[in-house]
Image 1 (cartoon, helix red, strand yellow):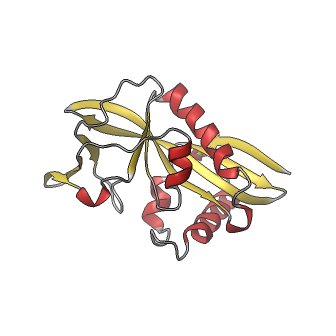
Image 2 (cartoon, rainbow, N blue to C red):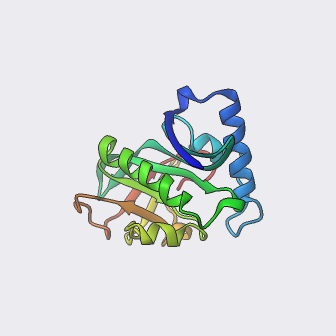
Length: 181
């Protein structure tokens, strides 16, 4: 039987963190988007985690962290979804949807809007849940100034329950190590 729980990073035990890392490493190993590394794990920490267990085994994970974006030059704090993964042995059983339902609840209640950088494998799940692709130009506030990130075009998705955002506007994220989106 699968069970969903949620908690803040501060409430994760050492064993929880190890199980999350093992799940994410296994889920992303050899995929078209590459392996899961230390920067990817760091990006997933500092917010709310949705954890799905089947018995004692962690089989699903995702988190929401707070980030600061500029949309058409205006600052907007957002909930950014990170590290959504399902164990390869448990895929196509609704676990990804279970994780996303919890993360969408957190985004709606705590942030108003959400964003994520979709992997090729995850894009269909997000599209089916109503997360459209951000169509406007993507940038990062790099240490040297604002830089265009055209390689990410088509991969950033938005969750905007109020329908208040212009999906064609310029979107700028803050700098971070590893993948900025």
